[in-house]
Image (cartoon, rainbow, N blue to C red; front, side):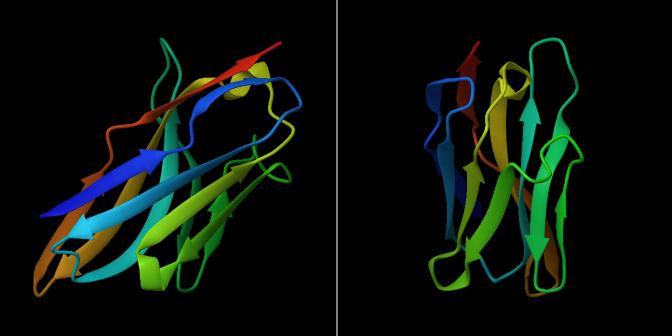
Length: 118
């Protein structure tokens, strides 16, 4: 079983920066991709950014402001968030797709709150 633990959330003023981290542990096998999603109150969960060996994708709303990176050796993914806006306020969830042998998994973290004050 794969566990994902996020950290780095908090309260920041508009225009500020935060860096989120997500470390995978447990029976990881081979991770194909890792990413970040977010869910604001009353809204659906949405993709923020995802990275794999071949692609990096961002939601249009965060392009140019957020940067996703991954340390494969540490099974960790990061999200550097800059020029934060009030609309970025949400719970941010880490996600990992991978496989242990023939068993594919889709793991999620518990979420970390990001609050941007205007």
